[in-house]
Length: 101
Ligand SMILES: Cc1cc2nc3c(=O)[nH]c(=O)nc-3n(C[C@H](O)[C@H](O)[C@H](O)COP(=O)(O)OP(=O)(O)OC[C@H]3O[C@@H](n4cnc5c(N)ncnc54)[C@H](O)[C@@H]3O)c2cc1C
Image (cartoon, rainbow, N blue to C red; front, top):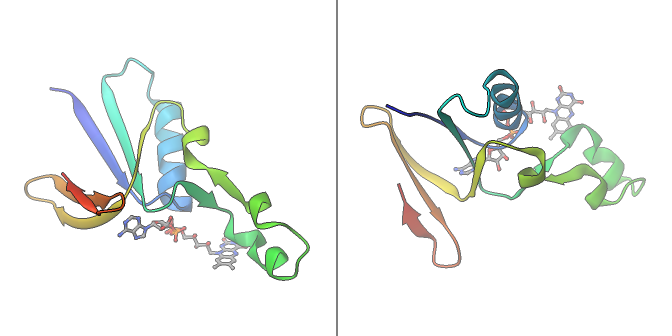
């Protein structure tokens, strides 16, 4: 049976988990990885103060998550519910916040 790893949150923890898994799993390992984040970008918070001080433009500290990942499927949405027993995550996305599982 195919294994599916679902990572919730695309901040430092989530994004780097996905990047490390991509490094350690070969493309044909049969393991599917999905990352869910409410924004389609990664924010480099350690340099946020430089944006506040007008030393940097906001675009200098954000990176599109899709461009950083090679094997991982990326889903932009809000995590609404996590059912660990059933191994299911409910997410909503889009204008109507329609639901997916
Ligand atoms: C201004 C500032 C400067 C900092 N400087 C440093 C530094 O110099 N060195 C250092 O070590 N640390 C620094 N930190 C702390 C560092 O940013 C955090 O420790 C780190 O971001 C925590 O990582 P995380 O993955 O746990 O959470 P986060 O990076 O917050 O990531 C969580 C992600 O999950 C998403 N998310 C949350 N809830 C949902 C939901 N329901 N559905 C979908 N997505 C969701 C969020 O949008 C976010 O993308 C700084 C923080 C700030 C604010």
